[in-house]
Length: 221
Length: 256
Image (cartoon, rainbow over all chains, first blue to last red):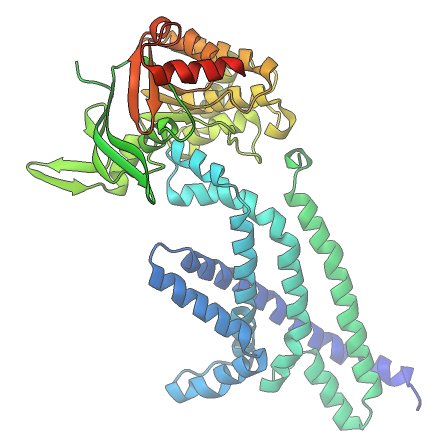
């Protein structure tokens, strides 16, 4: 077997363009996951028991079924009901919902870590529900879960190849295409692996930075 | 004159345990009442009911002439709305045993936060108010310190300033010196004594420390099993109690 650096050099621009799509899918998906998670955790903490149970069921369903199945479902089943979305949109929505369930769990852990006394102090100072979350609870609940959210983002990055199944031209889709056109898979797939590796490794210090920014030293007893 | 705080035939249960048993209580405007008694006798529950941290099963709770959990609409009695709860909470401030300061805010921000975000004062106005209050409790040099950097006594003084910033008519103190090292009790007690000079401020103080009771009380109430067994001026209840249960409790407290 021969590894052709020439070929690698030749296909690199194509792969990098696809990497942009991968990053877009990750960022959009992550943003959706953060919002979906917030909505789910709100329902999971609702006053009405029925709402809590329903939210729990949805979350379990999203986590217990494969992402690929969810992507297929959105892409092939929804059009039957007259809703058809572009491959990219389908992909990021599926990614966002799937990982939104994990984000909800992270939020929940963060919220539960805020001591009861903080809520009681908020009541005693006549804070409303929204202001309590905004000024008192979330500033304490979010910084500790930045690492978990970061892990979710990295996991999402590595799951974007699943979107190739619905023809999103992300990195793995393009690598695969090059391979089948030239009957040479080694170079494109190796290059793709290296690009994923670089992105994942670059994400870690970024998350660390955000983590440190959000956590003033003074509040660490 | 209308009492500032009034409990009428109030019953509160936690599961099978009756914490307040057809309980009656009144405190006049500006009165400083100290509540003593064994753990689980219902004194903290009384404060927590007034702060709307607990709901009662039965009876009427009034603050400043208005019902806490029910609104009288002519002859009808209606359950409270969220707006009514906020209206009532505005009359009451509370200081907790474990301070419950907001760890992500400096002392100044802790005190300025509610005036800003609840009363809608400007940042400058709220911080000016906070600074005045923190100076009053002797923490003018700790404005930018985070709670983790303050001693227990300092934290509790910030908590008192924070509650006072909302200008309550009734202040509730729930064992505020119990979590403190003995040498730090004095500085908190001093701040409370300074507050007690305010004629119109009603203070309800739950404590296990008779020194606190003696220093602040117009009236001492001894609780047992959800009822007030004995009450009167501190020199009578603490120094010369009539009821055998009060005598027993005070003997036990003095031994510690």
